[in-house]
Amino acid sequence: MSAPANPLSEIIDALRSAQRIAIAAHIRPDGDAVGSVLGLALSLRAMGKTVYALLEDGVPCNLTFLPQTATVLSPPYAPLEIDCAVALDTANHERLGDATKAALGAAPLLLNIDHHGTNPGYGHMNHVDSTQPAVGQILYELLKQGDFPLTNEVLQHLFTAISTDTGSFQYASTTARSHEIAAEMMRAGLDTAHLAVMLYQTYPARRLALLRALLNEMQFRAEGRIVSWNLTQKLMAETQMEPGDTEGLIDTLRMIDSVISATIFEELPDGKIRVSTRSKDSRLDVSAICGQFGGGGHRMAAGARMKGPIEVAADSFLNALEHEVRRLA
Image (cartoon, rainbow, N blue to C red; front, side, top):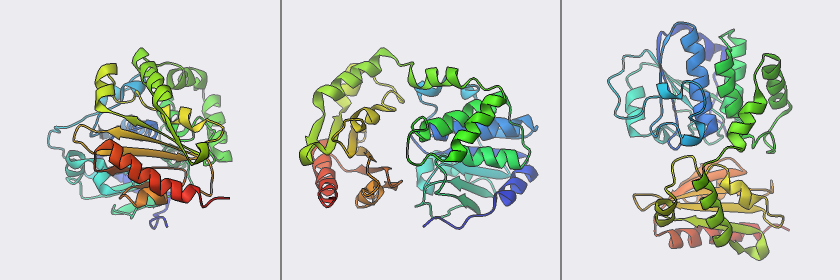
């Protein structure tokens, strides 16, 4: 169940009335998070508003080519005087990160705009639409409906948000409207081919070292229907991995013909294990499986954080996943 939604018109009115705004998204930001935060921020700045873009973990290296990423703030934050805060693509309040959550708390009004069905509606105003494939798509409609500026820089960010969260328009969550929006952006002069090259065809060599390890170390279960990989701190150090380097690697696992579920277990510095899992079969709800371990997300793309060590966490999660996979015909 999605949280009760305020109409976009009410969100538009709130943004139009505000003058000093802070915008943030979840920890470990992906393309939808970064693109949504800066897409909205740049549009509101073009209206003359003072806008702070906040990301607890900063912008990952694979997205720093996008315009104005250097303006994104990360902790420690200076005290902010703001009259409105916006949380984007963040399924629960805690996923903003402690420092960012505190910074947004300085505002008397919190707007929560999201597409995760598990979002409980933690804002003063909430627009949560789980039928949308990306928050960037919600924001495009918001900016268009509100007649807010849709500059080329804004469009670059919103296209990135939509493209990455739809798997470059391949996932089942992609709607006809997703393609229509891309066409509208192209007609407005957006160079989507260049963005595609930067997003999907431009990688540092260290990412290929990670891919080599993934192909050498991947493990199968349930007659090849489940595939997984353990990404350890040791390998991260050996490859000099940076945030963003693993983006899309799970899709390499997912593309194996026999596989209906792919999972990556990532060892975090604090000893916890970050679980990222995907489903290729709509009957397999990986968000429900992640929910057993305190996580959540979408039906076909979800995650969780578990206690280490990585081998124990992986075995526990994969046992639960295999139980569900074997229930399928």
